[in-house]
Length: 541
Ligand code: G4P
Picture (tube, rainbow, N blue to C red):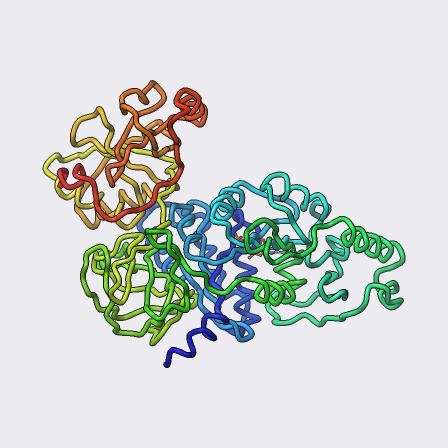
């Protein structure tokens, strides 16, 4: 492949994730996209992921979940000439730091909302991460075939709870069993649907102008009047579609529909893919941007997935390509270790199948077999020593202390914890005033502790006892302060894996108290992942 194809390959790529609360319909919408794109031929193929819904922590379940997560971490497929990379943001019990960090590897997101439930907790958390990055956010309000909340109420809630302005691109015609279709405000036409089977690919559709008498007949006078009134209201009262504002994350285009019934789904995909940005560049240390069209290959690691099966101790490091061409078997420069490495066996994923890839372009996600070389945040180049910045640690929400049942196993424990933290599954903190070997482990989702316990036992032969620690938030401290001063009954000062000062608080309230008492300090809820580990980690080994 010659380089002049790079710009056109970049232009047709879309790398995104769907953010939503469990049950809003993410699996259903994903499946419809695969179906319409021709990547699968029958609805139901992605449904096996549902098995993880009630995952418990026993071996079988963890294994099943591991298998499912690996294969669905990223779906790559073609849709109407676009090359799609759809990244999974795991929810439920496997909500973790990875879920947040995945958002560092995308260029836009689809925010999926259940029309009856509005903006829910997990959506709000994920939205905040996207919003901070200034990512373009496109909203799909799902399940309009059920009686949900009035559309205008939902728009008001998005604006109030999330603080983002909205601009409806289509408007629902009716709701619940009267949900007949959508009015497309860009093309100024109504799309009416008929109910057909869940598995069928396309829904017969009538496209008709809103003033058409035939439409009045189909809808009935009352519904038709309401529609005409609502359309004219939106035209005068709503925010106009302004792609500059969308690209900055100030305005979200909103679509209504029903993923299950294929109502408004295809028109959503078509509008969305047309409006969403192609792969964007990424920042390196000195504030310079690497552009996707730069000819030197560069990429960063945003996720490492370990195999829980003791028979296959391999890990997969997921990289996002930022610039240049990727080719199978190429050598790349691993900036942190200052070594050339061969990128063999690159994997691409579609549903349950993995396949080897020959080449890839900016925006693509590639899975590399990893024998323990990679760490989250690592940069790969063709020789430059630049490093991408901005892959952070997020504040854990749960904490435990680890006690050994057999003190002779210390070395293995330390090795295991160091490895797991390198993969980004857990975070290690060393309390400033505690014994030299005490560590507190933090994670965003509780399931991480089950995974940690399981892996310590099966991979490192360590039977560890995990004791819940009473903390709920971590904040990295910026500013000059004696760590002891930040300690109280409700907080402990700690050093993170890279030796930076942080404080763990038992509640948001305790955090607010510290913020009020130390107005000169900054308490940050993320910290960038940097190369060199702190001495205390090395000393533990
Ligand atoms: P998730 O991945 O976001 O957790 O949601 P998922 O797609 O699994 O959907 C959750 C439930 O909502 C499923 O029902 C699904 O069929 C339903 N659903 C999705 N989209 C729509 C829609 O547009 N309208 C309606 N009415 N329901 C929708 P379930 O009963 O939990 O599972 P299933 O038995 O249907 O598979």
